Image 1 (tube, helix red, strand yellow):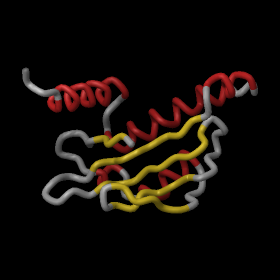
Image 2: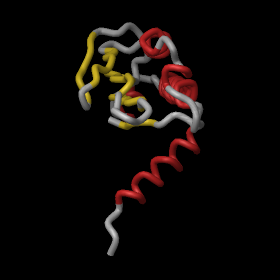
Image 3: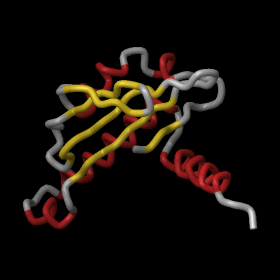
Image 4: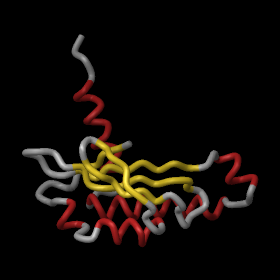
Length: 127
C-alpha cells in the first residue's frame, strides 16, 4: 500500500470531494471496504480494466496531520497481459493510475517519485 501526500496547502477533501465517485469513475464499481491504519478504504474487486485484478484506495486519516491518499493496485503479470493481447489495456491502466493520482494529489508522476525518494531517505539510518 502506498500513501500519497497532497500538494502544500491542499487537502484530499478539497481535491476530490467525492472520492468514492472518482474511484468508481476511474476504475469501476466499489465492491466493499478494507481496513488500513484505522481507516476504511474502498475496494474495487472487479476493475473495468482487465490489467487490474483488484484496487484498494481511500483516505487515511491521521490526527494532527492532513489526510493521505492510500492506494494499492493489484495487477496481472505482464507476461499474462501480453499473451492475452491486452497490451493496449496496459497503457490505459497506466494512464488511469497517473490521471487518478494527479487529480487526487495535484502532483505528477515525477513529483510523486521525488517525494517518495525523500521519504525513504528520511527513514534511512545514520551511520
